[in-house]
Image (tube, rainbow, N blue to C red; front, side):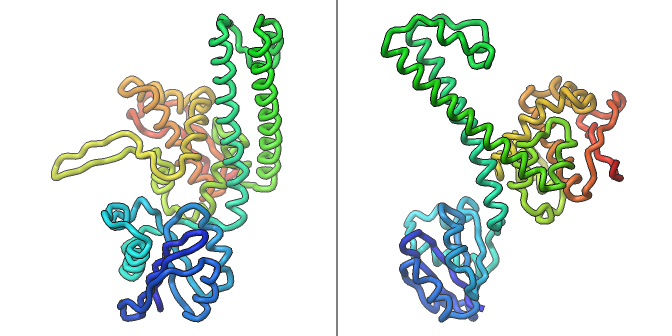
Length: 349
């Protein structure tokens, strides 16, 4: 089968084609819109490209073609990333070699349904960040106007009257009102997105199982399902934990092994919601609380909560794999520190 390294761009792409013997058959640039016709002439082929901006466009463009698309992560291709003479031609040639030798790390390509769900939960996360920035901007505006910071939460609905009581100059008042209107507008958007995520979860029985994990609500369950996709692509719970970046890093040389902080690789969206869920979980699950307190005596609170978040991810893997709800164990003081306190039932309740 022909091997093709494709350096994809929206308007013009570069290809490096290797024949079945592994020798160069053809290379050059082409108008991206003409790719379907080219691959139709080539026949069956394997095509490797790097994950990047707009890659779903390529998938849709080549839909129905006799090509097997494979995607790899740009950061894992050191031969390309560290190339001092980087060009589209050299990138395509390196991708073709990676494909022929099998020396690349494949990346999961979610289908339209999963990408659709991801758009929803990720838009919700972006909206939350916008609301946080607007809160900070409003507080900065008040501070610059010389307003003393109150002891109340000025963004709570019951304290909204506070903004009307502030004595401000005309232009500053207009700026404050504009920021408050934008803040309210994004709160409405957030509510709509939350309602849509809850509606999406009601149609998926896996979401109901995930919400049995302490600290996991509608948003966290929706994020887990959309970011994980098919749980079958993770052979073990450890592999899912590594995908979330919540596993500790490791450096080994000879007899020396040094562990570092979490890797922060993989899905930052899962990592973010699971850390937030962990703070709630230690209040709801006594066993997880005990584990957190024990670990906090030897490490920082942030490291301890990341360890709790990793436990929740492991529980999510078992729940999705076995299709059973979460069931916590009672705290066991005689257990060794670091041993999991939470588990899941082997039978559905």
